[in-house]
Image (cartoon, rainbow, N blue to C red; front, top):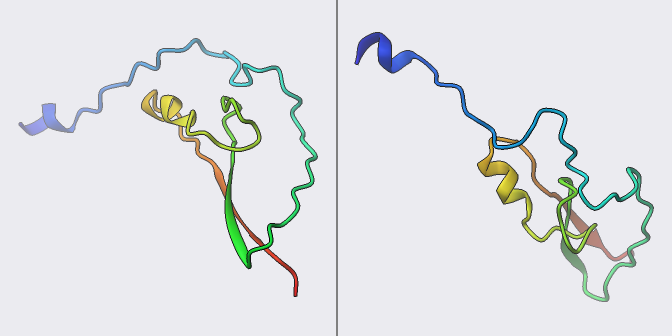
Length: 83
């Protein structure tokens, strides 16, 4: 144990430095109007990793990046209907 246990080993990330995360060549800024549903409120997961096949809706593609040590996840939005 001792000193060897306190040494932090570097993680190898299986992607090249500078590799693009935006693999679908989507624009960097999106403007999408989402109309609220008829229910009082609903939750929507918005993708921030650019890997989702249903972009801008998250499909949990970020889990691959998280396993590589990249801290990324969706934005959780709660849409409420105005009264």
